Amino acid sequence: MFSYYFKLGLRNLRRNPALTALMVLTLAIGVASSISTLTILHVMSGNPMPHKSDRLIVPLFDNGPIEGYSPGDEPNDNQLSYGDVQRLLASGKGERRTAIMGLGGAFEPDRKDVNAFSATGAGPTKDFFAMFDIPFLYGGAWSEADDKAATDVMVLTRALSEKLYGDANPVGKRVRYNGFDYLITGVMDKWDPIPRFYRVVGKGAFSTEDEFFIPLSSATRHEFRNSGNTNCSGGNRDPGYQAFLDSECTWLQFWFELRSASDRSDLQNYLDAYAAEQRKLGRLKRNAPNQLFDLMEWMDHLKIIGNDNKLSAWLAFGFLLLCLVNTVGLLLAKFSVRASEVGVRRALGASRKEIFHQFLTETAVVGLVGGLLGLLLAFGALALIAMQSKALTIVAHLDWVMLIATFAMAVGSAIVAGLLPTWRACQVTPAIQLKSQ
Image (tube, rainbow, N blue to C red; front, side, top):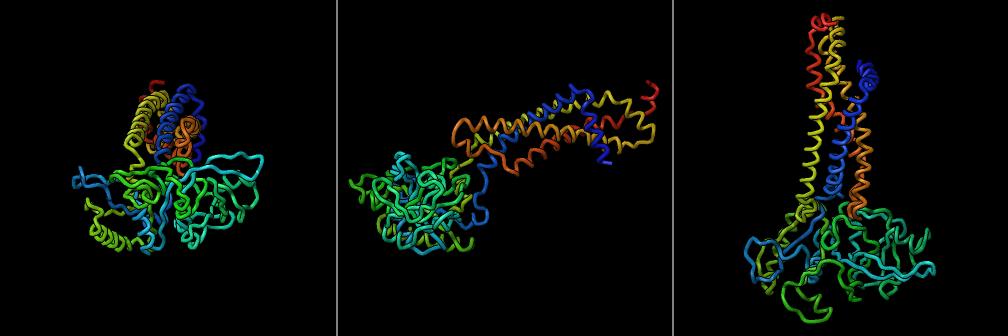
């Protein structure tokens, strides 16, 4: 019976075409506005590594100055100093450990048809690639020995590799970066986590991807400066790069990968013991709590999704509700002119339940058509949003989840809007309608 009612609903779209078009357009606009906003919120709040996010841990302790500090104040920074990072790397805690600095500089290609250009990248340790499940098109990551020896080696993204070498495999070749020759050990395949959780501070959660990676030890050996946030509020320091490394300046992000989420308490105990030891050496004077964040907690701590994004979503759903109220009125008008038809059907033996199913199926058809139109409008709205900035380009796109949600929302909204008009249509008294003909 449903297929019959569905076909009947399609035919009835041509009845009162102006009223039907107005209903479909009203529903489509409401759905498109909601889906556009919800899509951006969905992408921004997604878990980029759901299979291990509870095992990826960021440590944070406060090495800020004691002057002006009150217990309970926010940490001095969301990054760590170079000295703390080196000791955490040597701790052996967790299955993997990596520190990350931001980099930027000039590439000088061997190809005559490609001029020198600047690119942005990062300086991690070798565990970075395995920790974040980065796939490789050619070659692989550098070795632990390269980290220790501060070897000039590099991993390229696929896009940068194609820019420099076309489709050729560049592993084993050397590329000149910031005045030094780097040996290419690998080329990453597509790896595009959203948000860019691994280096939010100083990079941004929705910025363009890092184009290359070199060892942190190589970057510091060449005295490359950090491309990102650097906080030196801990007081005066001696001039020179080594003094900067030895200072309390915070400019590095750090990640542990645990073998199991249950190892988190052991890591917390280690951090507390480490902080106590450092206080004996005259550091960490604030005596603030030492914190651990898993991946999703870290994104929440950094407020990647701001209150303005959440408010926009609520406003969009409020607009959808307003569209539904208008749709209810239009459905009441559409169904009221069919009272005589309902009366005849009831007189011929149709039950109120059958009338209810028929009219509710028709509203679902209206919702399906509204969903198709709403999907087109949502694509258009997201395209306009993506034109505003590169960051919005990354988040303003529909995935399969949101495609399904579009139709579910459209059909569900139409059915909700059609409940009252459908119920009113079922209350028609056959005798009164037949007498009026």
